[in-house]
Amino acid sequence: MRYNIAKRTPTTLLDDFFNDDFFFPRVNYGSQIDVYQENNKYVVEVDLPGFKRDEIDIQFNNDVLTIKADHKEEEVSENKKYYYRSRKYNSFMRQIRFNGIDTGLIGAQFAEGVLKVELPIKEASEVVNRIEVK
View (cartoon, rainbow, N blue to C red):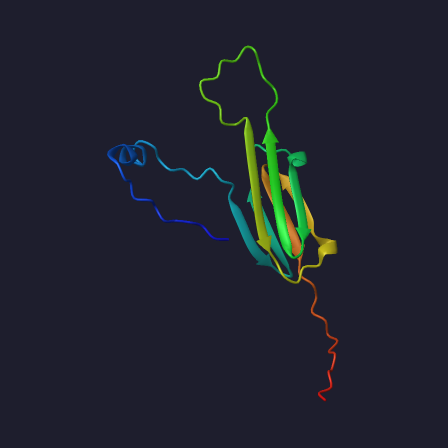
């Protein structure tokens, strides 16, 4: 994963005003993620508040774990007058590369807004294939 942390220098006084952290503080609205190794498995924990279990899609292909979540709020109430609305649609996607995973034993649980994916590490093969040098 690579993040761009360089801050662009404002070019005009108007840019300077709208990029000022005092008036418009920068807040990280992204989902938080932890990746760690525990015993003989990797564990990925992702905070996905507001998502439902059926809105989450997890795939493991070509040594890459892909976690996607899409939330769409379809219900519109005639009695509500919104002044600001940002929770109507929310999307999350993260990809992480792992090596040596036993794909048949990958498991996932989702409870209280936290997704936990466990990726068991394959046991190292004890069989050594000897190659003759000619």
